[in-house]
Image (cartoon, rainbow, N blue to C red; front, side, top):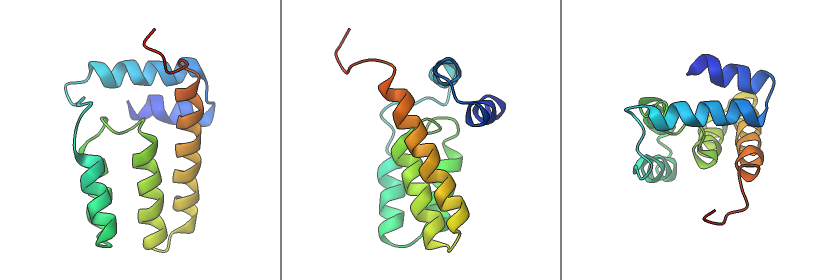
Length: 109
């Protein structure tokens, strides 16, 4: 899964995004209504940056295509003083939003 994601980041395409999404959905670690986003948010409020990052890593690959998880990782890295990784995670978040928007118009069909 990591290789797929790296290839997606190197040369983004809807096809690669959909392939990763399919693999995540088929994973036994896929939980669409998990509470980790809330847990990460709580950690950020308490400035527990390392714990927030660990929550993300421990969910792999469940939150891999979740823009809000990557935005929170950006906050984690900002809080730790790592601007380079913070900017990278912001870029990933925007990339994911872009491709999510290409998957449909929000209607049930």
